Image 1 (spheres, rainbow, N blue to C red):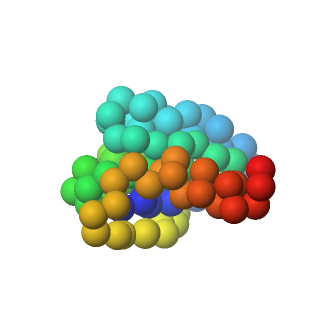
Image 2: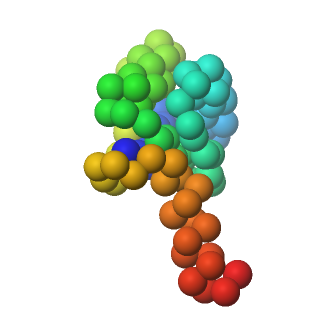
Length: 97
């Protein structure tokens, strides 16, 4: 499964980079395959391991604020491992890039 997620504290002002940095540390330490992008993070793995990362990020941010906003998009496909890199490569190849 691939999960695209973003997480942000509410009520912490305009800059969220400190909170994002906290989430980055958790994601990096998790061992779950991931890609950071400007609007969130893609995670690839089994449901329990991916959701454990999202929950760890949630719990960490809730230590410093009283409200967190999380957005999730999930693409779950049986028998298709290593899709994180292959999906982009496939689309680029079809586009001639």
